[in-house]
Image 1 (spheres, helix red, strand yellow):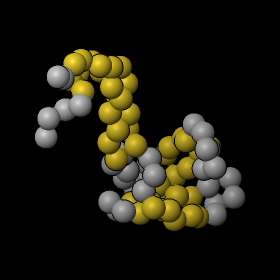
Image 2 (image 1 turned 30 degrees about the horizontal axis):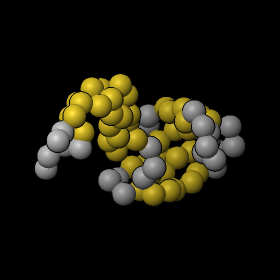
Image 3 (image 1 turned 90 degrees about the vertical axis):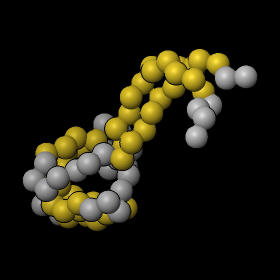
Length: 74
């Protein structure tokens, strides 16, 4: 039996070069500029030290509090 529940949805965030971002928490917390982004990797620059770092994609856009059927049928 399928019931309605409040569900959080996660989608990969679509970064673009030159974008200024702020990460709220975690080891990469703070302000960054997007230097390069693909579906798999993101390269960020610290605006203070100007050091650049490349990581596997890690940021997601979240939609909270959506009431929907769960589990969803494929």
